[in-house]
Image 1 (cartoon, rainbow, N blue to C red):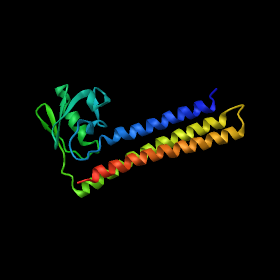
Image 2 (cartoon, rainbow, N blue to C red):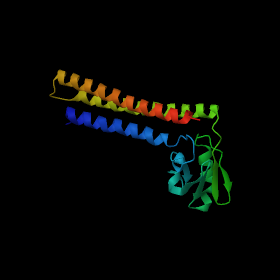
Image 3 (cartoon, rainbow, N blue to C red):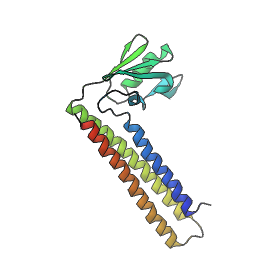
Image 4 (cartoon, rainbow, N blue to C red):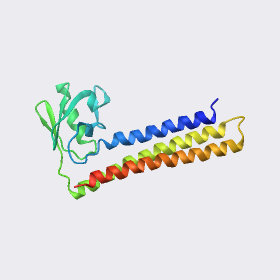
Length: 184
């Protein structure tokens, strides 16, 4: 059976994963110039399954305002273009022969505000992951046998402190990313 320290350690690992996921998602939100990681969240319908873009194509940023996506299989060009268009990142890809060119739209005030909304969506997903970890740990604590009520209450306080700490980390990441996006 689990012990209080094991439950807290496990919960902390899950919360850490939530923060890492937010960091990863933030790399797909562009700030000023093109980076291949902007397309990391794109999933392509390939060979009957949804696959990460970087598994079916190489992504390069030859210039600050454009990305070039080269599918490993030339037959996947249309699927790659469709996946990028429908990823909700605001890109308008164009097929040029065997490659997909992704010009980055100019960053006007409205576009920056849209990107901040995307950042907020990722932040909320991070918050949810952290809350789920806390809830799961709390349920495990309540099911423990042979542990005093006081120990469980102390563990729940520690759990809440940990939750608040990780929520704060996500919020700090959010503020930094927002500032980066809104910077002209």
